[in-house]
Image 1 (cartoon, helix red, strand yellow):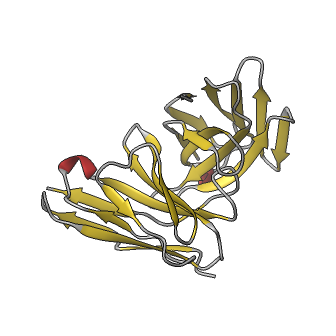
Image 2: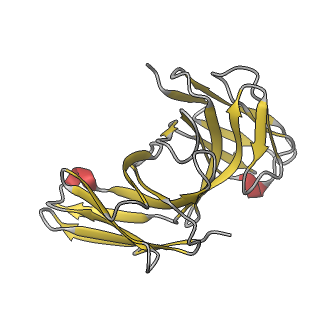
Length: 113
Length: 113
């Protein structure tokens, strides 16, 4: 099993550009989520999904969109990048939810100029 | 909403010594308390968790204690080794598998050989 994979590993964007961060898991997990990690801020939940076709907002959803068309994939879209979105983004998955063991991907480091 | 305070933010110990990281939470309904370890350049990994129906849990050199009355829980690492050097995150959650989970801001542990 590859576990949770994320692409790209690093990305530089200009303000106003859009992009999609990819996340895939091969563990047949129903629950997937996106976090952002900023220095001194811990991990904050952006969006999550409890299964294919179902998504919901987390703590900091503004400026981000998600979709879940398959069990395996959970892409995160930045609609119009802003410098405040400079961060490290982690995708995670688990069998049932956040209060089960979450398996994190290696992260995507995003710099918005 | 739930708030999780984690202390200290940095901790340096000599190899072989013990390390203790403490977290306090605000919501008395919280009933799930995981600890994640994040090595440099990697995603967080669950190392131990505890639920509110137990007061202590051990796994080899790692233990977690929970005091629900005082609303705090701690991570204890004994006989520390250089490979224990990482950032450790606590979290507190409530509401079942798909309930809320709030992370602390992290503790950077350095174990000096």
